[in-house]
Each structure stands twice: as C-alpha cells, then as structure tokens.
Length: 408
Image (cartoon, rainbow, N blue to C red; front, side, top):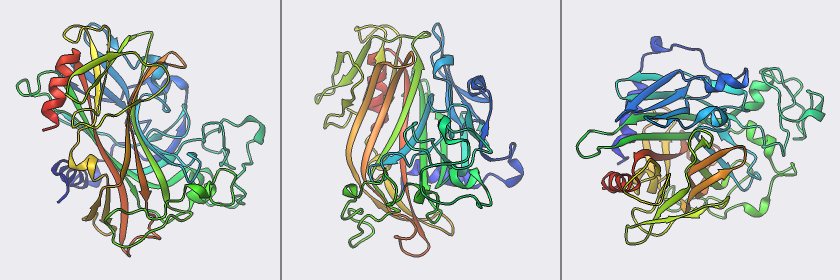
C-alpha cells in the first residue's frame, strides 16, 4: 500500500473540480525580478507564515518568523531560489532539470494554488526545464522568455536539433516530460507538535513520451554514457532495465530552501549523531552528509550554539515509506499505484550558511539509481519519484523533539 499522506494528496487534488481553476496555466511567463517576491497564497503554523507564489510554480517565497521577519527576504525570493524541489541526473550532465518554479529567476511557471484551511494544494501540471545553469543552451526559441546566453542571437542553441518549425516554439522546448503534484500543510497541533511545523509533499511524474529530453541526448556534448546504470529497478518492475537515452540515470532530487542573510544570518549548523543527540558545528560551501540513523535526515540552522535558546529553522526528511520507497509506478489511466521501489543510493543533508549572493541554503539531496521513461515501462504505466519534507521553527532542541515525533 502507498503511504496514506500521498494517497490523501492524490485523492484531494483529483477531487478539485475544473471550475475551481482560478488562474490559467502557463509553462513560463517572464516578468520583473521583483515579481518573484510577491506572495499570492499563505498558511500559518504556530504564528509562523509560509507563503508561495502562483507565478512561480507554488515555490516558497516567504517564511515569516515573529520577531525576526521574512527570512526568505528579497535576495532569495527568485524563481531559481526560495524553497522548491528539482530533479537532475548524471546521464544528461545534470542539465536536464525539471524545476518546480520555472525557467529563469524572472520566468516562472504560472499555476493554480488552492488554500483549504491549513493546507495549500498544488494541482497536477507540467514542469518547466531550468535554463541549463549558464552552461548549456538548449532553447532555440525565446518568444516566451530570454535565456541567459547573450551570444546566441536569440534564435539558436547547441542541441543539434532543428526546432525552427516547432508548433509550440519555446513552450515545446521548455515543457519537460514531467508533471508535478504537491501539498503544503500545517502539522502543528499545539499538543504533540507544539512548534511551527510545515509539511511539504511532492511527486514528480514521468508521464509524457520522451521529447524535450532529447535536447540533452546522446548526440550532445553534455550526455555522459558512462553514467548509464545497468539496471535501474531494484525489485520493481521485475527484470533487468538498463538505462537508455531517455532514462533518468543516477538521478538527484533536491528539496531545499534558501534565505536572505541580511534578514536572518544563522551562525551555527546542528546535525544529529548516531545516538540521536544534537551536534553543533559550522558549514562552509560543502554538504553535510547524512549519518546512518533514523533521525539524522535533519539539519538545523541556529543563531547560537545553545540548543535550548534562540531562533532556529530545521529541514527534516523523515524515514517513512514515501521517502524510503521513493519511486512508484502508476496507471496512466487513473494514477492508481502499481508498484513501489526502493531506489535510494545516497542521502545528503545540505547546510550552507554563506552561499554566494548573500544567501544561506538548507535541505536534502536524494540520489537514486534512476527513473524509467514511458518507453521502458509496461504499457499503460508511468514512473514517478516522490518525497516528503518538513520545515520546523523553534529552538534547536524543540526542533529535534518535533522531528523525533514526526519520524514515528
């Protein structure tokens, strides 16, 4: 059986009537840089406000803490920053990059966000590709949004594909094979969980037959055939499933949040040791690798080294079924669960107190064997990668206590 939270998420989003759509979907719309800082929807947990933008795929652009302020701030409130989930893989040079928020810091994906009580629903919709990190130009068209490659004349790219007659022009180039579905919710109940606690559930679904991914295919300079995994599945689907040009091989899923150091400048990173105790340290630009214990997928940024005082923010990924069996197969007809597979090969905690651009960054990165395309699955079945994360606000000790309860 699938995890009840994800079953509820799927049922709740599918139950939303078509007449409830408040804003038209657009794969990307280019605007002013400051537009990404506009919060369109929000929920509250124990006095802390979590806000998102429906102009940026429902990405998090506000985390307002009483007495501190909005720690996302103007610096991190851009479509390529804030709080969101993305995927990449090694086979395609980490350049094929379906991203929750959009294409560039100025070009976000316009979506519907539905607020129901203590929840914000992100109904199913396509994911845009990110722009290639200024290292690979795959967009010949720029009729929707400019790419960050000033020497391409605005009408060329380097993927080797003639896209001059694409009916959807840049929209066809940017629309990935993936759909996204998600939900934010307040899980603080004043009793079991007393501090501010937001849950973020998400699923990225490889539902469309390969098209856009071929812009990163075997004939391009970024394709790395040495990263093709000999067998993508662990148990399901049964049999041997070697990576092909359209498989995501050695996949990386990052769930992160960035903040503005000018608003809140944490100085200490807490992690959890094998005995479940907080360990204070500092972090530079490197990753804090997860330890092998049930509670260690937790990273905490704090204003000081005393775990019982001061403002702290935690990012937690519990060891539940959703995060353990991170890949699922679903029916293309009705999204019914067909199988679950445990494909995680590595988990990392990300803790960077002084990322470039005046920001800090925290979160998790999950590495997996990969994901099969619809060309490689059984007829009528697609694969999806999923996850569940928490943003917690309190003292470091309060955050650890809450995470321990959420893990059980």
